Length: 275
Image: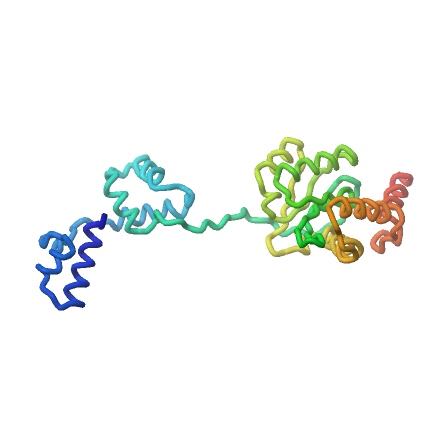
């Protein structure tokens, strides 16, 4: 069914393009001639501004929600008027919603003075020989650069990130804070709510500033060089097996320049003995 406003446009087009009278154009467009000449005297500027304001603040809400908000604010426009303006503004069309992140404080990358004071987490990705992509969740302790856990899966959700964190805490103890980027798994309510319940501070780095998470970024480079780029993986079992063997060597036998060429576990053991 064609709306009257659309019929008016059709009649105007026919009159101009086909050089016919307005009477004939209105008859073809099935539009009353009086409707063609009718001009609304209503001023919808305030309705438009209020709908635009609400749509920008609440982009996920539809017409009924916005109408209810207008009524709560004391505007007595009827439903038909709000709907007419809503449609004319094109607010019924699907809109891209850009997720807005809260402001992230840019903090200097300071070294932790105690074990389990600050952990860093990040994702990496690679492919099997059958071209199927997989991801790894890397967790290290900033204090002695010890790799606490690397979990490899085809995909991760907020729930799987929490499960991996639970297993890591069970083996190594609970951290005071965790430094992460703004990936969807880390900003999900599942992850943030669980960390809040456990008394773990989540420290987000500013978007586009990977240097603010420099410890895990440096670790990722080593892991990619020694494992991900060094092997062609047939399946996930092979990824996990090679990764576990590499983790043991990294923590127990590989010298680290930032630790005076000591291993992560050797540095930690020496610090505990000197206390």
